[in-house]
Length: 292
Image 1 (cartoon, rainbow, N blue to C red):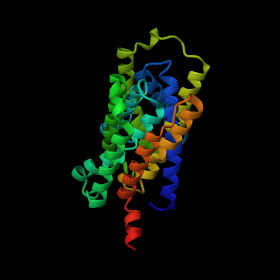
Image 2: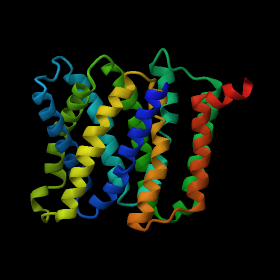
Image 3: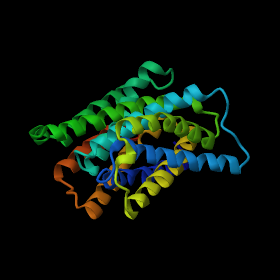
Image 4: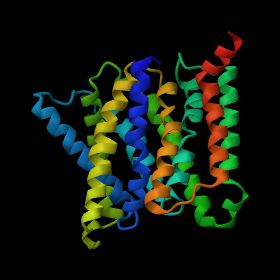
């Protein structure tokens, strides 16, 4: 993780951090699968237009990979988070999503040859689990709706981890082609799902601020963000790239508090602090510095 990759990581956190806010705005007017279709579909169109403008095409022979990556990173993860935000706050969703690196460490140990488990990583996973327990807290069990929303986001984090590890297959592929291919494949899956589940033609026409939120989450939080993401993956390990999920919660918490009136509780800050310790252990820099 050199200075360039850290810069890309912080930029990605800004781009993805506000997506939790936009989800909360959008699910008030549209069902989750249709929200995700709009996000992914508009982004896919924009990136394919950019490909054509540059005289490039999507690479042949990669569609199986694009489909797997799109289902893991966009279809399953996005829909679960979007659905989860119909039951929990955007800030809570962003913090629960911050445990993604923990799953990357565990899954990566078994499916990769160069991202194996180590004692700092084990400590990081343990702290991440503890932070999540503190964050969720016993009061979460007072309502089944909140529990389901929290579980949905945690399961989405598992799929994010799997998708991030699978995205290693696209190293060497230009970021624009990788992002456009993945989002195009995801759109092909989401379109029939939206038609079958949500029947969008029966929904009332969204007003102006819903369209603005949809365009923002599609063009900024998805199209632009995935260009940055695949550029980051070209030079950093998946474990390090997944650290972006911890940088996201402060942005989502601030947007939720200012624009949506969501409370920033001491419990949320405490849980996030313990998760931060876990991520610091995963990164290993603090332990190395202390030994030095």
